[in-house]
Image (cartoon, rainbow, N blue to C red):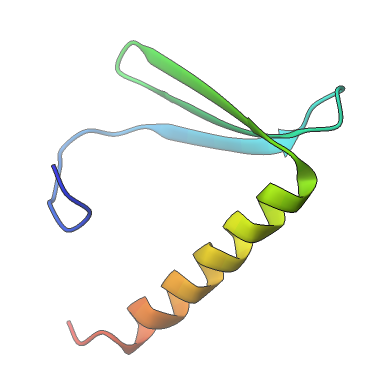
Length: 62
């Protein structure tokens, strides 16, 4: 499956700080739980990538 492939799979995403000073992305859906912890600087890089992808998506014709 690639980034442009549609899917009927649904999942929940939670984002927040941990008590260990990390930023956690927590994905849960259909019997799977994926906690992903990032250093704050890594989380900021991910946030920048999300912003850039959102800006590009806005320019995409539908």
